[in-house]
Length: 204
Image 1 (cartoon, rainbow, N blue to C red):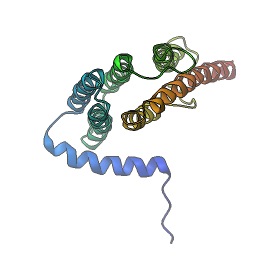
Image 2: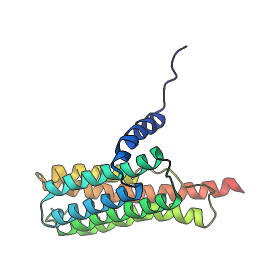
Image 3: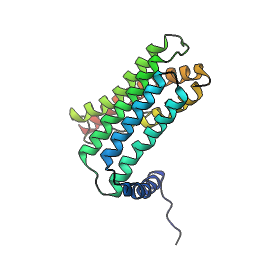
Image 4: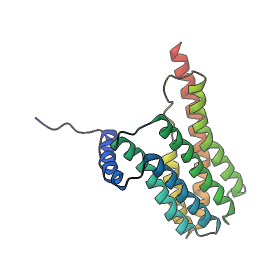
């Protein structure tokens, strides 16, 4: 009988579980990994503020990878908790906001408008995607967490990381990354708003 092919999500969960079992041997709790990821993000932000984008991007990448460890360890050790998920979400917002804030101190070429305008728009859009999700659940528009949207937090952080790498050599590329992400992050927020409205109508 042919072996059933795993979906991408099932394959990811299986790999994540294996990684979690190995990492859990270090004895660090899931929340511990979350906190460590925040520390690396702070260090990354400091290097970025000092105009050292390349080193900053390396610490940011480590922060991104450590953020994956907390969930993997929690599942592998069967320590998945509501507070853990809550803590992880809060730290995610801090990490992304720290990196965006640090870019305010970087000398980047302007693009149509001053670059700080696009950084503000990007920060606003990234926070709104999370707020809309929380507000839709709190106000009873949806019964489960609102998922969907063109650009999620993980995708944004990976794109910012790549922008930092290339931008350390070609600054205008990072300006374009910030501009495009600013537009797409707000579009993702609008998509979630529309999705929440549709789900609310379907409940009636």
